[in-house]
Length: 291
Image 1 (cartoon, rainbow, N blue to C red):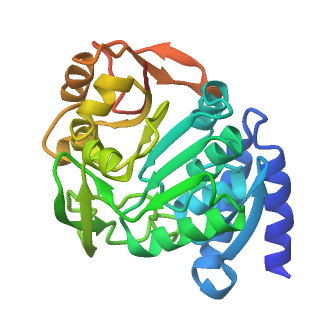
Image 2 (image 1 turned 180 degrees about the horizontal axis):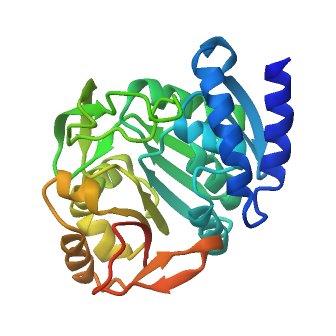
């Protein structure tokens, strides 16, 4: 009965999630039912419909639970993507996770568009592939079980060592750069550079690149120097002071690197609106749009 109640409530909260302030309505539901699903993992797996596609997720995981209750982990980048990604375009999704961004983008670009997704964690990659298949997007999505960096090789992947304050697993915080809060070893992963991978696999050049790789952003961008110079794709980038500094660089370092390719910067605000980045007042965590 509780499972049916949760599915019914989440259907309505997802449907109404674009209404301002719905975050505060869904938050207590998120907290209550995530605790419930964390203690009953056999009931936590869901297949939900959103935005014209389907997604399989685990409602006991933090990021997945946000999608389950709100329709998106973060709405602002998805609103922006809807504005800039057109039919027949190509998007690269670095740090694809379970496929929230990948499946939404595949829905937008249509049957003649292309999505190239990169997800290094084995278990998460399997779920990504499952969500691609669930939507019959195999002809428009190519998924690769690798991470992107500035050189080819192997690296160790770490996760948050404890559940968060609502009892859910932190499924979106895997990083190559372990910290006191992210020190649980997961597995070794394979790394490639975007430049070499594009050439080796004869991939279509990107119109848009989304990068959310928990501290590896600058290294992924450095491994994409030829792609950035030749095609100047638009970039949607998680821009985090904490994860960047854990990896040994700063937000300013990223801006300086991208300026060499003539990029201009905007923060992605509510409903995907763009605000020019003030270099003297950089948010400690934001989504950055580079064009």
